[in-house]
Image 1 (cartoon, rainbow, N blue to C red):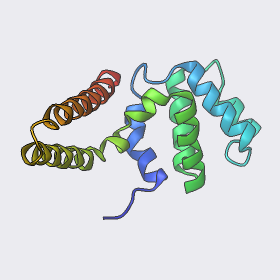
Image 2 (image 1 turned 30 degrees about the vertical axis):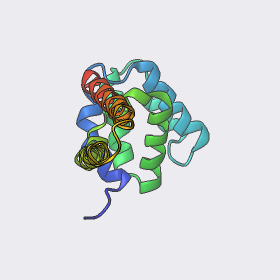
Image 3 (image 1 turned 45 degrees about the vertical axis):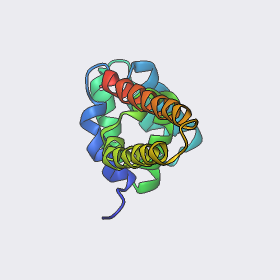
Length: 153
């Protein structure tokens, strides 16, 4: 299986990013300013003014920005994801393109749990409670992460 490109990810994530209330006007403006100031070859001053036009609705501006980036090259899309990570980290964590990695994370957790269960079974009775405590803590961390992403959606 081939790795998804940043442009492929942007196509997959666009409907999610366009969802009502996902990105605030301030977050979109910060992303536009970062792409314009640090990477003027990605967004020219003219483009940045167009995407920050207060007369247009946020939805239209965001749609235009994402469309512009989808027609760009891989590096431009990658820089968008970097800006999104900086200015909207909770949203970035729960993007659909990142959620496709979950089955592998589930298998890793399952393997860890099976390994710890085997250790508990094979180890002396004194080590069992410590391993159960570690397993419980790890499970809580994974569930909290899942719950955070579910609430963001």
